[in-house]
Length: 130
Image (cartoon, rainbow, N blue to C red):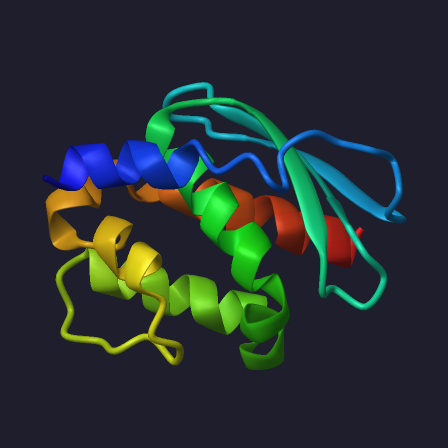
């Protein structure tokens, strides 16, 4: 079932916990529900760590982003985030990378959690652009 898989993805804590090792940092808050994420990103944007006070969708999205940040950065965060939002809204879009876990949460059945799923991406964009 999808819920169990989403919980399993979110429970991957390999990149969870800030260590103050990376120069790019940001905190982002979801205005709709109050979820908060703090991120730190390497200068090359190929590694990241995070901490959240959030729902399972934000946690799962952060875990996926942490694992694939290098590939997503090659495509461009803003472009990738726009594709994710379109796909969640039900548009027939193929993501540039076949990331099975991301395809699971970026689904139109989770449309009402779009901002939660996008929050880690928004935080990294904020860290990069600040």
